[in-house]
Amino acid sequence: MDDLLFSNFIGPGAENIDTLRNLLNKVIDFHEGWRKSYYQEDDTLFPPSILDTKSFEKELEIFLERSKKNLPYFHPRYVAQMLKDPTIPTILGYLTFMMSNPNNHAYEGGPVTTEMEMEVTDLLKRFVGYNADGWGHLTSGGSLANLEALWAARDTYGQGKVLFSEVSHYSWKRICKILSIPDYKEISVDSNFRINLNALEDELKKENTLMVVANLGSTGSGSVDDIEGILSLLNKYNFHLHIDAAYGGFFRSLILDSDYKIIPGFQTVPEEYLYRQLIALQEADSLTIDPHKHGAVSYGAGAVLYRNMELQQAILNTAPYTYHKTDKPNIGMFSLEGSRPGAMAAATYLTFRALPPHFHGLGKLVNSSYLSARHLYEEIEKTQDFANLSKPDLDINCFFNRPGKKDITELNTKSLKLYNRLSVENAKPEFILSKFVISPEIAKTVLSDYINSQNENLISLRTVNIKHWGSLDNFRYIDLLVKELEIIANN
Ligand SMILES: Cc1ncc(COP(=O)(O)O)c(C=O)c1O
Image 1 (cartoon, protein in one colour):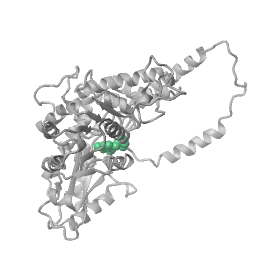
Image 2 (spheres, helix red, strand yellow):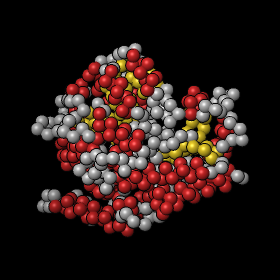
Image 3 (cartoon, rainbow, N blue to C red):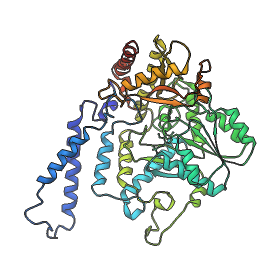
Image 4 (tube, rainbow, N blue to C red):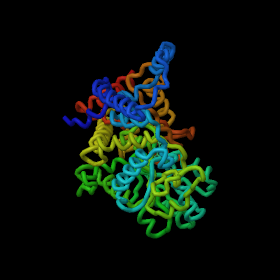
């Protein structure tokens, strides 16, 4: 039994809540001590009859009652989206600095948390293989990281085409519109939802490409583009390679030892293809990687990393009323966002202290997610009633209830029946899944032998195994899910 898999979490059944309670008290005690020791000689501003909290307590009760309607993202029965349980280090790191509320836009807004952010950035650079090269910072999320990277590349190299696969995150089209880049193109994918290299090369031959975006973990199916193949194209055609590793970047922790060196062979990642792409990640000119996805941190923690310092100059910005400490780093000078919570940097810092992103730390959680998805894939293969849409590259599974004949309309009817039962559409579902809807064009590639007389989108079921609970107790919840699917399909 591996303690790391449990000790950092409150747990689906609040198993570790007393640990959290004790540690939270330490944080509160620390704040009390700090405030009380600052200008001790000053008289209190508070009158002896301190604030009547009765009316606020009532508000809090109503508030807590309302929060029960939130979905159980902490539980292994919730596998719909990329949501997960925050770790205990995240909660403690965030709370410690939320209570003093630093702002990492400038050093003077948050000296300690700015330094923590720089340390996290250095760690991430080491993690992705940039080592001493490059720069980067935390962002509020992956969309902002993507936006900033394209902005910086465009202002460094000038206008040009932006190429990304048709299953890329929706932010890319939106970003091109924001940056007034009309010349973007969605490239078709193969039956594993990976970018079609021939189609990409056809576009590259037409010249004037500014950026190619590769996915290391597409949002819908977690597919990993052939980064090695894209790097061969980079040798022939000149472009800036951005890897959108917002979701899958932390899978690199599967192949790194505790010195952040690549573990030789591919024992730690059963699929050699994935192992090779995780190594190739280090060749990116820039990349997006979100601690708030597989980095075990709560929302508000994305990151963007760049290899080339020139890109920093392109977006450099100063202001007459801030950034005063000239001898210290002021992250706001080269970040698209203004105010950013120092608490988020602190939460990320403390989380990586407890769960460093290598095979013996965070990698254990990621591995558990990876194994869950492989197990679910294999169990689906064994059933009579279900089929996998593709083999997961990471830990997102897409599958469907086989129709009587190979017909998309019939397949969709079956998917929707299951989805209505096992999703947020149902008041008390046994499991909460999501659906993955793909265009008729992609459906033709993925299920080439199916009839689609109505030219409909294809609807499959989807699970995101981002929480590592799936593989525990001999895949208890994955097996339960498959059993449940079979029961519903046969009723
Ligand atoms: C591949 C990919 N890129 C970018 C994003 C955007 O990240 P965020 O929601 O943090 O803005 C996502 C989110 O799911 C994603 O999966």
